Length: 456
Image (cartoon, rainbow, N blue to C red):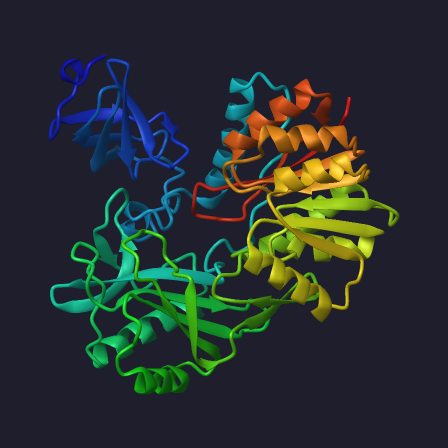
């Protein structure tokens, strides 16, 4: 259907029924079989919509008025959290969010013709204020430096003070740093003209340690009024152990630059995970929801049915969180990671926890897996926790050639998980039992899951 033949046009209004949610959390309606994606709409509702954009095979719309409200709608939430994408599922009551995530995986498996059961999503007792890291853009609005978040599919900043899913102490810290920057008239970054000073305020806080790191990302090499800004941050935020300037002079959407300058305190903060101590720097990949991460890793280890004598490979080992939490339960762990800084962190974390039976290697996971296979390394269990793009065919083939008893797949993207499970199936490995979704990111559309594969 061409755009000019679409049954809707921009600014038209319609009454529609919402029958589904997209994987991005937008309501789905149809007009003459033409899909309309509606922000802040919940399945089961009848809404009056206004068309905002028309493409060749679909359109976007906004809710003008809810005519029939779903029992699953959560009205106790700021609409900005949904429209910016900070918390795109916050308009759904929490049990409905958990069901949506289970159904998301079920639908993708069905599409792939994979007959694998999916367990109910494991949720959080308190699904708010869980994030231990914030990266908040800084822009000038009406002559004033503001912190907030971009409206979805735009770079229009919406000023926000309560981010709902972040640790409340982090929200407080972001607002405090913003006010100090305003006080000393530090210029916000202007991305159109590539001018100004402060691009982003990043805050990390240890869930158990309560140690806090403030990172001010600047376009400029110097932070104006640096000494007084540092002094005021320290006075206002006693948990702060590290204040860092990150310099990013590129015209890019990438948040952090390559250079970090310690303005005060330590270059890392510390926190614990499953009783182990971890150093966390500005660039460290560290799970943003440590409460659920502990459940996730404990469950993954249980599903691996470790006896203590196993040789284990941890592909995508990062700063060593899985490797080091598994190490006390097995004979030997081999980790591989492509980011040099993460490997350095992993080795330091192993030393800090006096763990000797882990060996970390720098390299691409798929290439190192091939090398290990050629060297006749015979792991009993392989853990894979890949980025959203999932596994490469090369890694899957190398893993299968090693003939492990189990492959434990921790996924952050159901679409690539189901694709990879099909490839494993073709090579003789099938999922044992059910896939277990875990709600690592409540109020958002993301879902982690664990699948255990064994040879047929």
